[in-house]
Image 1 (cartoon, rainbow, N blue to C red):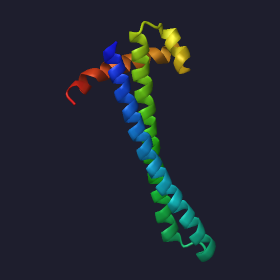
Image 2: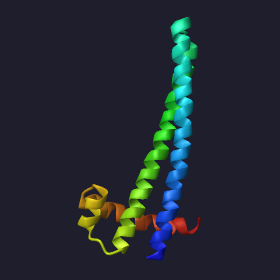
Image 3: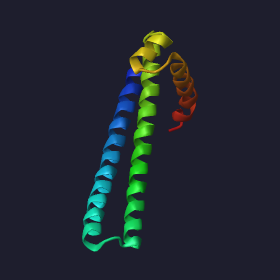
Image 4: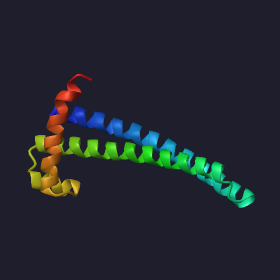
Length: 121
C-alpha cells in the first residue's frame, strides 16, 4: 500500500504543477483578451492585430485545457488504482469518483497498461 500512497502523492504533485502552469497560461490569455478588447474599443477592428491576439488567446486556452485534462485523467486513474489496492470494489470506486463501474474498469486497465512505460522514466 505504500506504493499506492507514493504513486498518489506523485500524481498530486503533477496535478499541482499542471494547475500552476495552466493558471499562468490562463492569466496571460486574460491579459491579452483585456488588452485586445480595450484596443478594439479605441481603434475599432484592426483585423491583423485582432486575429493575432485571438489566435494567441485560443492557443493559450487550448494548452491550458490540455494540461488540466491530462492532470484530471492521470489523477483519476491513480486514485482508482489506489482505492482498488485498498480493496474497494469497482462499484465502490465508481461511487467515490462519481463515474460508472465500466469507467472504473477502463481506468484500471489504462493504469496497468501505462505502468510498464513509466518504469523507464
